[in-house]
Each structure stands twice: as C-alpha cells, then as structure tokens.
Image 1 (cartoon, rainbow, N blue to C red):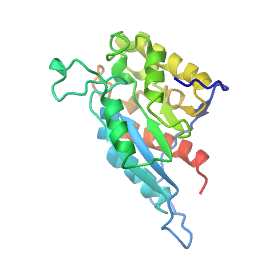
Image 2 (cartoon, rainbow, N blue to C red):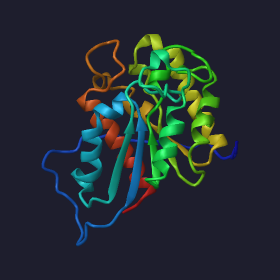
Image 3 (cartoon, rainbow, N blue to C red):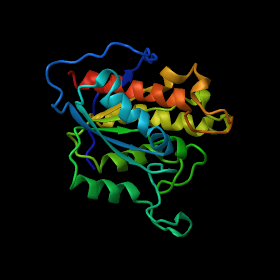
Length: 233
C-alpha cells in the first residue's frame, strides 16, 4: 500500500445561513463543469441529499458547475457488509466493490467522504464496523482511491453526538487527522469545529446520530466552502 508523507491538513469551515432571497451571482455562461463530486457516506448523506444537490447546483452555485454523484448507504462505515442481509454476511467489502464498479462509469474530480459515525458505537474489528484499528481502515479505503483524486473527509462533531459514542468518536477524528500525514490527497474538512456549539443541528432524539434540517444545510454549506476553495470558479 502506498503511503505518502505530508503535512497535517485540516480545512476550517465557517458556516452561515444563506439569506432568503439573496442575490444570485451569474456570468454569461452556465454550461461549464466545475467539478464532478462523488459523495461517499451513510444515512446522513442519504437524508441530506436534496440539500446537498440544492446547495451545489442552485443557491449561490447556480452556474451548475458542480455535478454531484451520490453513493451513500444507510448504516455504512468504512468496512460495511456487502450483502443485502448483513446478518448472514461474512464479507465487509462494500466500498471495494462499489467504488470498483463506479470507477468504470464515473471519474470524479473529488470525493467527499462523511463515513465515520456508524463506526463509533463499538470497537468491532479491523475488518468490520467499529473504531478498532481505525487508521488501518482509513488506509484500506484510501487504497481504493486513485492517488491523484482528492478526498475531502468531514470529521465528527463529538460534542453534539451521543455521549456513549465519545470514545469511538474521538478515535475516528484522531485517526483522520493522522491520515493526512500518510495520504497527501486527504483533506479533513473541520465539521467538528463548525458544529460543536450547535446541538440544534442534530435531530431532537438525544440518542440520534442524524442531522436535522439545520444540520443538513450547515454540513452542505461546509462542504461547498471546502469545494470552492479547491475549485475556484
């Protein structure tokens, strides 16, 4: 496995609500492709897909430059069962199969990854859901990605996630930060800092790991800001 040494890279994001009726910025062309963006994630990505697409293709990005491609799976972590019935599944190679087949059809300019929260519940093992050996799990995922493709990986806002996931959450974030030293194409988008003072971003169930509507929009805004920094219009 190729390991690339580089400086720790974390993108700080500032999230602000888009004002209703704000003026839209256009030029005389709106037919160019700014970037094909592959989203890899879990149910938070599935449930927030409409807001992600809206934010990247309308709102203040109405030049249609971004082309979002959604590849989320409810309940997914890095090592995810690749069977329809996970209770009888002995292999957890979902992303290996999915990205392998997808790569023959789509060549993204960037991958946005929000995997992590489903790995925080219990340690598991290196080849199953869980936060055990998480650096090796990240390396496994990154080995599936071309080394020239940037991966913007959002970290977790542990302070507003369920308290019983604190240990796993901290492990995931620590491992992500270290991954930027091994993989020069990994950029951690600092969603943790952007969301840490906003418990209202989560759904009202205190045990939930899901973003509510405000959180979905704030996450989409954070990702859009990170994409804009990498792909200037």
